[in-house]
Length: 207
Ligand code: PRP
Ligand code: URA
Image 1 (cartoon, protein in one colour):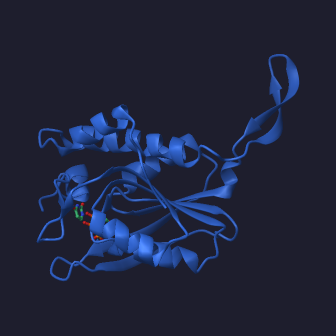
Image 2 (tube, helix red, strand yellow; image 1 turned 180 degrees about the vertical axis):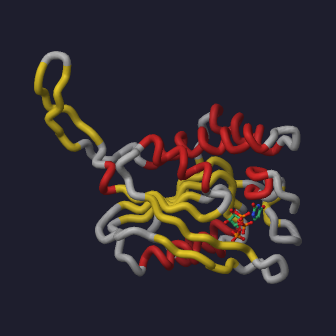
């Protein structure tokens, strides 16, 4: 199921990413902010577990998300600012990494590094700003499914309708929260209007 966020704050931040004068530092900062806005939506119906804590009035029970039941998985490299932001929000949550690179000619994703913690029964939150052809996200979900998580959520900034359909058809059981569904994929398999290459924009590397 795809949930597109309609909040105007999210849309404003996202559209600043499209501006080419947005430098890498601000680009990563905005990506981090949007990651949190997406997480608020995606985790909006999590149950709170009662925990006894010491307050200024003594011992009392209060509700908390059990962050050790969450696992954040970043698709490198453009997902790095997102995972930094979310693991700062939930510092006890384990983090995993999948390094993927789209082949420039075939546009197929190639997995070259995989470091995922134990996921059995847990909620895995995959973060990657872009869903273009959907190949990278589909492959990431397939890898994570082999580790038997309880639930998979994907947080993304921009997707193409074509790529999102591919992910929805291949993995109908996951929940996707996305800041913007753009117009289309272009002939080079980039999202239009999109923002260019999110990894390059984040880290000042030429395309
Ligand atoms: C980008 C992006 C996604 C992928 C999306 O990564 O972060 O992982 O492309 O494209 P797809 O939906 O067609 O698979 P890229 O391969 O450019 O690597 P990078 O993050 O290192 O720049
Ligand atoms: N990767 C990106 O970062 N942007 C696109 O538009 C497509 C793939």
